[in-house]
Length: 114
Image 1 (cartoon, one colour):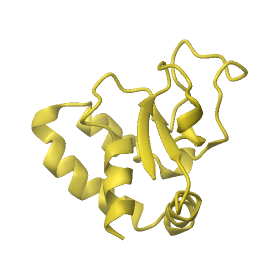
Image 2 (cartoon, rainbow, N blue to C red; image 1 turned 45 degrees about the horizontal axis):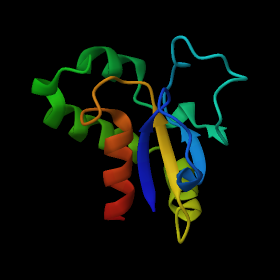
Image 3 (cartoon, rainbow, N blue to C red; image 1 turned 120 degrees about the vertical axis):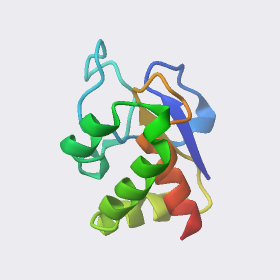
Image 4 (cartoon, rainbow, N blue to C red; image 1 turned 135 degrees about the horizontal axis):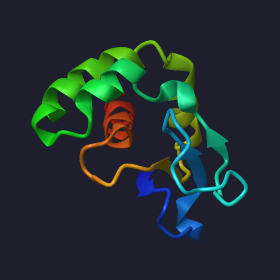
């Protein structure tokens, strides 16, 4: 089962495997302080797409379309997340303040459709 959680939220036993899916390390978080099992920075949106989107909800639908095209080129990481979440909890970690309009939500939706 895939879950989403901000890196700033408390760790839970129900999190299972915790994977950071941001391309840039979260502000204010020391690498040794973040409980995570992997950092899949290559699955994050390209720098150009991230900058264009800028967490603007009005651009959300277009961002999702563009990002899903990028995810097609990350088959290995997508398949790894899918495999890990088969019968187990996997939590995709992200730093964005917006809990609805972020790349982790797109990754989760993308994997669940496959």
